[in-house]
Image (cartoon, rainbow, N blue to C red; front, side, top):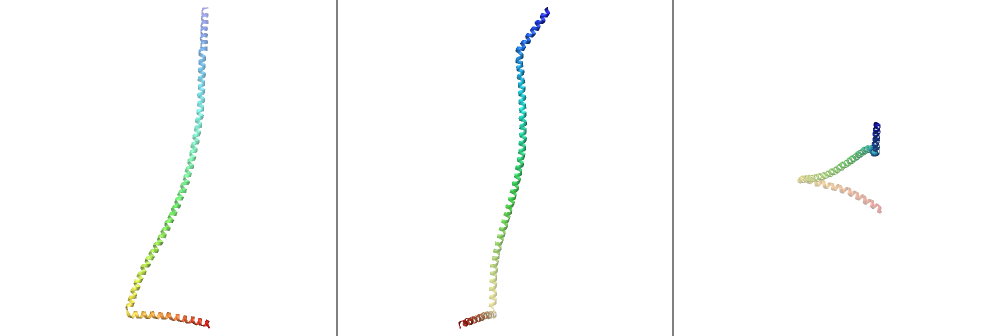
Length: 180
C-alpha cells in the first residue's frame, strides 16, 4: 500500500494544487482573459468605427472634390462670360471713341476749311482790290481812255434815266386817268 498511498497522496496533492490554482489562479486568469477579450472586442469595434469614419471622410472628400470641380467649372464659365462681356464693352467703347474722334476730326477739318477759305477770300479780295486799283489808275492815267470812260459812264446814266422817265410818265398818265 505504500505505493497506493503515495499515489493517492500525490493525487490529493495534485488535486489540492489544481483546486488552489482553480480557486486562486483561474479566476484572475479568466478575468484577465475576459478583459483581454473585451479589449480586443472594443479595439475591433473602434477599428470598425474608424474604418466607417474613414470611409465617410473619403466619401465627403470625394464629394468635396467633385463640388470643388463643379464650382471651379462654374467660376471658369462665369469668368469667360464676364471676359466676353467686358471685351464687347471695351470694343463698343473703342468704337464710340473712334467715332467721337472721327467726328471731332471732321469738325476741326471743316473749321480749318472755313478758316482757310476766309483767309483766301480776304487775300484774294485784297489782291483783286489792288489789281482793280492798278487797272483803274492805268486806265484813267491815259487821257483818251479817261474821256471814253467818262462818256460811257454818262451814256449809261442817260440810258438808266430814260427808262425811269418812261416809267414815271406811264405811271403819271395812269394816275391822271384815274383822277378824271
